[in-house]
Image 1 (cartoon, one colour):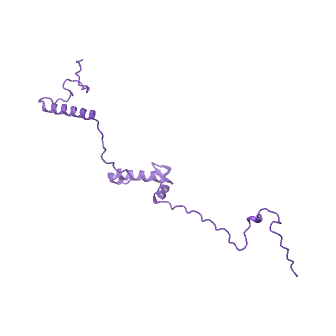
Image 2 (cartoon, one colour; image 1 turned 90 degrees about the vertical axis):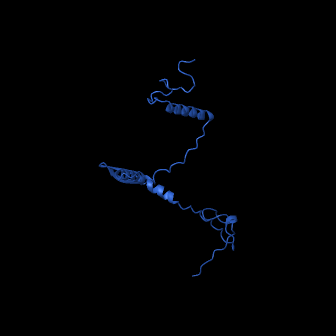
Image 3 (cartoon, rainbow, N blue to C red; image 1 turned 120 degrees about the vertical axis):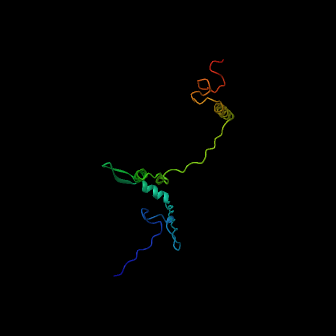
Length: 155
C-alpha cells in the first residue's frame, strides 16, 4: 500500500476560516511562536481583609430563647459587652473602643477670652464678699447676667 502524497498547494490557495488563517498571518518556518504574556498576579489579601471578611460572615446565636443569624462581629461585640458587664470589668472592651483623642486645641477669640475673664472676676468677687453663700443670684441682683454690661432696669 503506497500512500499517495498530496501535492503542496501554494499558501494562499485554500479556503480561509476557523483554524485556517490567511497566509500573511501564519507562522513562518523557523520562527518561534510569539511568547505568551504572563497573567498579572493579584496581590495577597492583608490580614485586615481576612479579618473583615470573617467578621461579616453570619453566625447562629440563641438570645433569650430566640435563634437568630447575626454577623460574627456583632456576636463578638455582644459577648464582650456581656462579659464586661457580668465581671464588672470595662477593661475587656479596651481593644474594641477607639483610642482616646488627645487634648483638643481650642482657638479662642479675644471676645471669648474677655467673656471668660469677666465671668471669673464675678466668681472671685462673689467668693470674696461675706454672706453671699446663697448661690441663687448670679449677678447679685436676683436675675441672670445677660452679659451685655447693662443692668435690667437701666437704659
